[in-house]
Image (cartoon, rainbow, N blue to C red):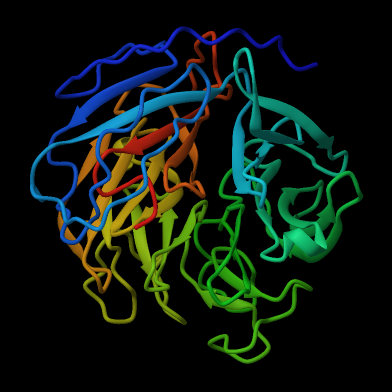
Length: 403
């Protein structure tokens, strides 16, 4: 039974040089000093004040370049939804609603665009009896078809009693598997699905073994796969008739593309480092032979690596030249600024460190804001009375809104 949802607290606006440890209000405005080097970002002005639980109406972006590329900028934080249970995947529909999966309950939820007394309206669309949850397996990623307006199809990644698999379905219908036999384990199940700019479906899988599957070209484990909507190998893959796009992964739970069609992916579950990788066709990312910088041309080095305690990141999202990753053990967002060709500028900065606990799902909303979900209703979490939550971040300069 879903828990009774509580009314949102009145909005509060404040400024701080760093996030405070307690935030229960529906909306907060904080100053994030030197988060990004905004090389060619657009300036949008301060976001409008939020109404409790309602996304703010953002001003239209201007064409002006930020006059303070290395300075501070404001970030508005709004709690959009409460009382969820381990939200894992998020995907937006053409009407602005988001489909959200819950890993352990096997529910697909519709969040918004309508509101109620506690924020965006949350409605259960369906619960999938095919899902067998356990460990970090369950109902994981979700991706709406690029042609959802006409085909009404979504794609999901989930765990069964014997494997992980990808299926397509129309909401309310029965899942039709298109890709089966992805290795499962108590951890390291991967689970992300996302459509790339090329229209093909990308699938992030995990290697639940000490690394043998990630390096095995015949295994679907420890890979990023690129397939058609029928689950077949996509044309142009590195090896003909193979679904594998890249290999040597420990646990891919986040996929996102920038405007240059470059793919970024999270890497978690390694012994020493968490990683944010710039994914290149056919490259091997080293697990289970190396972690972090390989110093070996046979393996691709990460764009960024962090100690595991500061990372264990899952969701990935891109805003202009900023790549964000949501972290579970690290309990923060890492924000990395990149150049026009995808190389790193400066050092990544942390946002929301310790503010909301474990962070997992992350996506860029159609209006250019970031949506991030907590993951505190699970082992290792310390849930508050409103957890789990979906939070909206609006960057006053160079972030929310489309330039």
